[in-house]
Image (cartoon, rainbow, N blue to C red):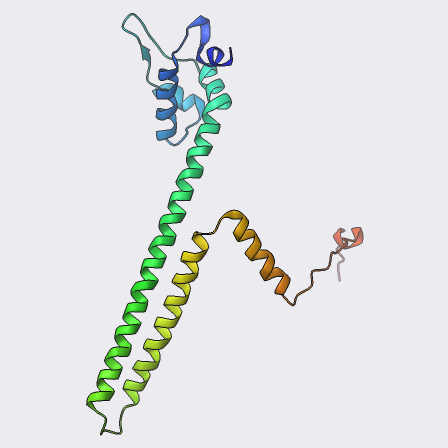
Length: 189
């Protein structure tokens, strides 16, 4: 019965579910506009014998009873995919940085091998140290990011608990004194 109620519009006009789904898609694709604005542009239902647009009231009911929940689920999926894409891009960038760091190390070692007899190797040593630092930082972060994205919610929660338990900081519950919240009267000096 609830499904029929959702499809029924004003004055007994019955809109089939495929049309309601089409209206949802149009509403969602437009960025979930306000009902009055959307009612001006909503595509009319046309079955060949008549053409009819749902009223503002019908659209409002559809949005409130169904569309908002569907939109939230889609928005959550979009955010999840965006987050996964951002993490993957960050891992890729850090892997590139690690490769560059490794290449810098190779260049420094090549220079050292070719110029063993020269005393002025400060630049090659700096290059080697910098290459090691870049590679170590980049590989460590990218590995951690890959590991974290593969964890379930329960595993992430467990990791956070372990970190908190190892923390030397002790959390102490505080009571709020009403006197602290009262504003002090202003005085003219």
